[in-house]
Image (cartoon, rainbow, N blue to C red; front, side, top):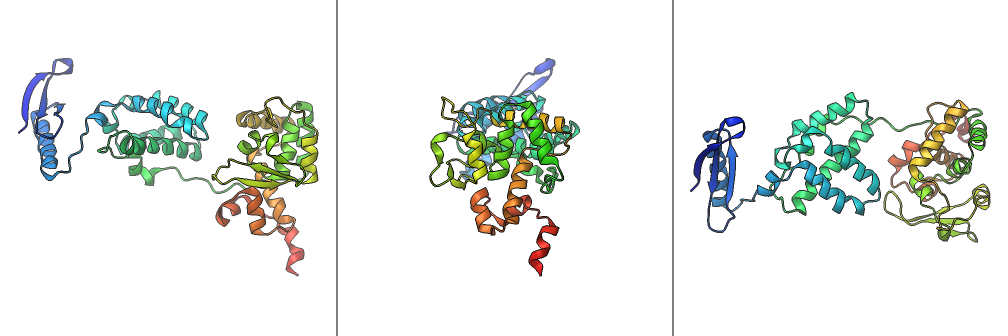
Amino acid sequence: MATFRKRPGPGGRAAWQAQIIRRGHDRQYKTFDTKAEAEAWARQIEGEMDRGVFVSRAEAESTTLSEALERYALEVAPKKKDAHRDILRCRRFQQRPFARKTLAAIRGKDIAGFIQERQADGVGANMIRLDLALLSHLFNTARTAWGMESLSNPVDLVKGQRPKLPGGRDRRLVGDELPRLLAAAHVYGGEVGPLITWAIETAMRRGEIAAMRWEHLDRKDRVLLIPETKNGTPRQVPLSTVALGVLDGLPKRGDGRIWGMRPDSISQAFERVCKAAGIEGLTFHDLRHEATSRLFEKGLGLMEVASITGHKSLQMLKRYTHLKAKDLVGRLG
């Protein structure tokens, strides 16, 4: 049977501690502002013990979100492909006031408030989606791997309040944008010019390009192996003569990597080049979209394009493929 005792609380206010000692279970105790709250909690816990469904909430009620984020950054994030970004995301979460709450105390309203704050800061829907994905994975990991089986996932409670992702981008190079882009890249110097050409010739993702290694190049068969991709399936990319020419113009690095720039550096350099060229609304990822569209315009079939780009489904591929209507007229007869 539960016992209750009155004890001093914060700020001089009285508090009530409920304690349950029962054979076969660890001692359970929790402090409340009122005796009624303590009694209600005790009835719930003892009822669960009677039915054989009790799971201790002690760890979830004593571990703060900040502490859980620290453990996630040390144990989980390093095993993921985007480890550096996830660790940075953990650090940003730790700076928020609700990170001081325990995992068991975080509710859907806390997540909804976080979403509203991010939107007020002008953060894009996809970035918020990635934040929520990490937070959701943390709660699921705590429940399944860290022994906090009683924990619920508050992120699941706000599915209807998540910001709607924008439709797929359809930005393509128009007019003389490509020569202007390459001219500005030449002035900028470094690898960004060859990177632009390579992206348009191969439709590779930014991260895949940054991870390229000479050992994965088969010059005889003119293919490049991508051992690790976004969807987890390795693939080989056929190389055009232009793409091979790009590689021929690159110096060999001592570390085996083909490019010296990392993903974020590629995007930053590309943004500066676009600004110098007077081109607006173009991102480095749009070059993958441009390259994919060009493959279709060359007459390649759906499966052929998918084998080059690595898209898993037709729906995903359609997001990147916006053919120029005037180039299709001749096929209609």
